[in-house]
Length: 72
Picture 1 (cartoon, one colour):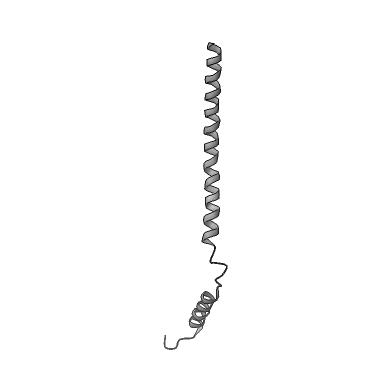
Picture 2 (picture 1 turned 90 degrees about the vertical axis):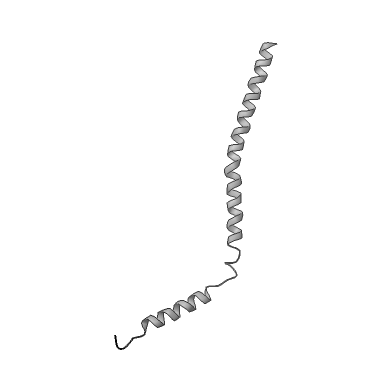
């Protein structure tokens, strides 16, 4: 009878260790899924928006810097 109780306690302790290990493995998995979802959400508007306004502004800046200023 004592051996039966000890073997049941060992199996319960082993089960708890397995569940704890699975819980620790589940944390990075949930973090990775969350990071993937956040990344796709954060990138949702970049496909629709072009670089047109930024490139136009840069072209105006370059033109202004290339102009020769007299009197300096």
